[in-house]
Image 1 (cartoon, rainbow, N blue to C red):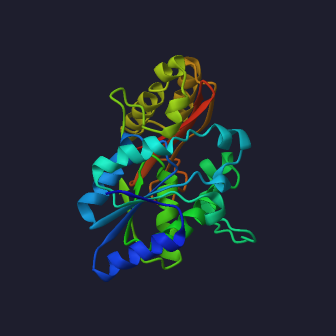
Image 2: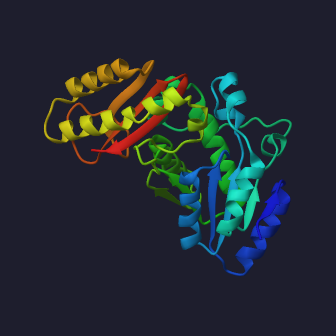
Length: 279
């Protein structure tokens, strides 16, 4: 049975009983609008943990634009219905005032790696993400946390956060779930028009071609510039970034060196898509 919990006190009571019994607790933090990628994280958690919590909270502090927050898809009942057959033990879906009560005044600010890529284009985003993730880790007291590799920069920052703050939790990255045409699964995909949905897979294709060229020795700057040009010619309105970075530190790379990651953000039909692949 999947219990829907709203308050930290009832969540802690439930987890306390599980911990007393010696169980390993896993958490899958989400903002709802669940898709196959989220369900893959839940299945990974179920395979490795005795108890699994899924959190659903649309965190207002990680949105840099009010219109983006207002447009974010929400359907809690549908989310819970998807989770029940997977045997999730609890869904924690707190109201905003439970996470940020009156007088809340603390922000967790990640290091320099948060200022690049997403951080450059979404001011304050990673401060909000790091703050809520820290709170969710401490609220749930989980032993393991599961994140998708689609948000690669976020995954690296969360790993650094847990290590730096001595939070006793293993941060587990799971492969990006993709549609058959290569588009990375994302809650924002629900906002794509039919025309934009047809265009969107071109991002992954262009990234794959660029990664193969770079791996074969092609100049990084020229290859990325050509890929950006191709994306704009295909119909993307804007490419926020297309960058080759060290996979763990996210330092930009001017030449290929292992481990490397190609990361991108581009706009299709007014919807911002992000993706990343290994090089």
